[in-house]
Structures are given as structure tokens and as C-alpha cells.
Image (cartoon, rainbow, N blue to C red; front, side, top):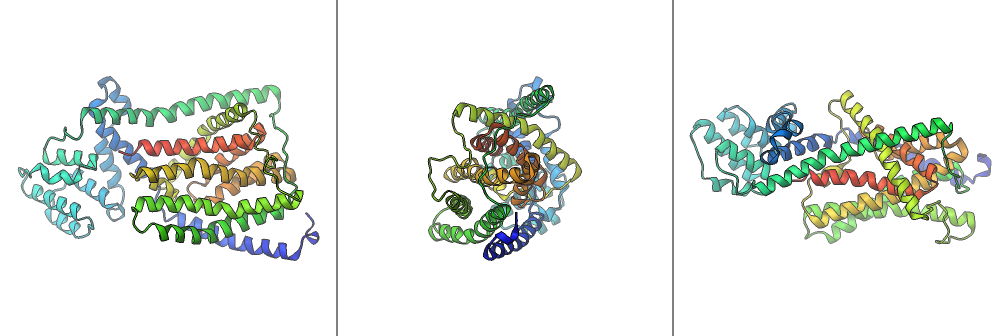
Length: 453
């Protein structure tokens, strides 16, 4: 790239975009350290499901599904976190499962609770601590029936029958959920590992990897700077949210908070996608003199569709073991990781079906399509043409991971980005990497959906 052949206005715009991107990403990564890891909530939800499914698990299988008492495990996990850092629900669970009977402690804690129902419950626990034979009317706890696990804990604490709510049918449903939560990842890892070994063996046998021809747009690196820094970050992440959030707030005054959150995320993605996709449209038009939708500028290569889908599924299965391995290593090295994507927590605690559908649409359709067009449709082929395929895959994967603004999730996302890049070039189809990305997000979404009680 010869800088003297590039207009000063283009250079100035690229420079300003890079400076703004540096500060935006630096602040975003720093803020990610303040966000809690969703892995704690996921682990707790799984233990709650295990406790609720206990009566339906066959005795000969219990040692595989329940190693230690789930309630004890939850209490142990909660006790390892500062009490002040817990949510009000988790504070209450810790109090209920605690062996302490300090009535003065309960009075002090009750003052800090905002939830009036929780305050009343602590008063009941205090009465129980003063008089172990105290048995309140079980109807007092009807307010908590919507939270089955909490209701189940109260039944144990105050010795009343919860079988009308924790029925055999419900318990069986929880067991099926537990089966899916445990077996789906394991089977995916097993199949993915076998497939990865087969690919490795074929590569060693043939002494080469089957790259397909890359047809990149005739763009320069400065065009990539303008696309990522200018379009994706400055216009997409900084300017667009001002419009999307304002739009949703204007029309969501009388809807639930859950639906409002989901609408902000859904329209946030739509508005964020418009500027960079607009830049891609302009870049293609400037290269070809026109933009024709029928032309496959980005090598989507939909046809044959069966081949494209199979390649996407293969790529997804192959990358799963590697991403999960990196996540496992990160968890073992860092006890309390921070910076989980806030979308994960919203999905995990969402009970509005319309809201859930919008989040599903965002994560499994909008996000994969938009991100693959930018990172594997335009950026990767351009980098591969300039620096070579391997370097192109690595650099694009790093930028992809960095763009998600989460220090804790960067290593797994980097590995996922490498997998998506390999699938894109090995299949010769951008559609395959879209399928792969969608399946990855879909598996995460499914796991969070199953964890809801």
C-alpha cells in the first residue's frame, strides 16, 4: 500500500477512526472487568435443576448426575462470595441454607433488602431461629411459588409439603433438562474430537490442507481500517446506539422491562449493522461502478446448499472441543473471571416469550450474518491476499475477539474466530461460516434456555 496514492481526507478519516476506536475498545475492555462472570449463575442454575429433579433420577444413575448434595454445593459457592456482592435472591438462599441462627444478624440483613416479600421471609426465618418448633402457615409462602427452587428450600426449612408444586411430572421435566444440559455438550465434544482427529489425519496423509480459492474484493488495508474502525466501531458501536435506544424508549413506556431490554438489543444490532454494511455497499459500488444484488461479491456460495450447510456443521463440531478446552484452561487459571457478555445473563433470567424470541433472532440470525459479512466476508479475504492465509485467519480472529469487548472471553472467542476463518476458506463459502456461527450461538442459547426453571 503506497500512502502517497491515498487521499488526505481518507487518511485523516482513518486516523481519527483508529484513535476513537482505541479509546472505545480500551474503555470497553476495562468495563468488562467490572461485569460479573455468568458462569457462576450457570453453575448455580444447574445445581438448582439437579435439586428439583432429585426425586425423578433413578437410584442407579444418581451417582452420575448428583455427586454432592446440590443445596450444599450452592451454599458452598455462595459462601465463597462476599455477602454484599450477592443478589437479593442469592442472599436469601444463603440465609435459608445457612446453619446460623443469629436473630440479630437477620434484623440487620432485613434492613438492606429492597424486596418487601424477601423482608417478610427473613422475619419468618428470624422467628424460626428464636423458636425451632415455630411452624408458620404454609400459605404465607404462596408468594414464592413462581420461584420453585426457593419454594422448595422453604419447604425444607419450615417443614411443609411442597408436592403440589414440585410434582413428579415437574421433577421428571427437570431431570430431562438435566440430561440435555449434561449430554448435549458431551456428545458435541465427542463428535467434534473424532472429526478433528479425522481432519488432522487426512491433512497429514495428504500433506496439505484443502484451501479453496479466495476471491477478495480489490480493497486496500486502509479500506479495512475505515470499515472496522470507522463503520463497525465509531458509527456502529458509538453513534448508532444513540438512535436505537432512543427509538425503543420512545415506544416502550408501557411494556415490561424484559421486553424493553430485548427490543434495545434487537434494534441495537440492526442499527449497528447499517453503517458498516453501508460502507461495504459503497466500497463494492466504487470498485464495480454499480452494486448488483444477484452477484456473489462476498463468496456466499449458497449452492450446492447441502454442501454449504454440511461444511458449516463440520466446522462447528470441530471447533467446539477447542473453544471449550480454552475456556476450561481459563477457568482453572483464573478463579473469578469477569466480563461475560451481558446478553447471556439477560437470556438466562428472561421469562417473557416474545422477549426470548427477539433475543433468539438476534443471536442466531442477525449477529452471525452481520459479523460474518464483516469479518469473514470482507476482512479475512483482504488480509489473506496481503499477508497470506494463515496470517489473515489469525489477524481477523484477533480483531473479531477484540471487537466483543470482553477480556475474559477473548481467548475462547479468538479460537472460535480461527475456526470460523478456517471453515470460510476451507469450504470456499461464507454461508458455511454463517451456519457455523449460528450453530455456535444457538448451542449457547439452547443451554441458557434449558437452565431456566
